[in-house]
Length: 138
Image (tube, rainbow, N blue to C red; front, side, top):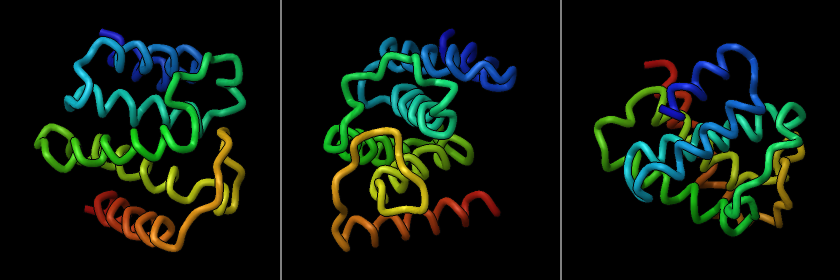
C-alpha cells in the first residue's frame, strides 16, 4: 500500500520517499476516484511544503501551472462528491486548489512556474482557504 507507506514516511520525516510513494499511489488508483484524488493532494502537499527535501524527486507530468490548475479542480470536485474524503483528506484537497490558484501571488514563491492570476482565481483561492480554515476548526 503506497499511500500508507507514504503517510508513514511523512511521519518519519523522509519527505523524498513519501512524495515518491504518494505519486506511486496516485498511479495505482483509478483517475477520478477518491483514493486517486487523496494521493494527488498529498503528493502535491509534500512536494510544495517540503520542496527543499524533495528537490531530487522527479516531477510528475502535471507539474505545470495549467496542469496543476486542472488537476486541483478535479481533486476538489472528487472531494466534494465523496464521503470518504472528510476532514484531513478534504482539507488537503482544499489547500491544494487554493495554493495552486494563488500561485506566486502569495507571500512565498511556489516550486513550479506559476503565471499571473486573475481576480476570479484569487477570489476562489480566498474562499477555499476560508473553507479549509473552517474545516480545520470543526
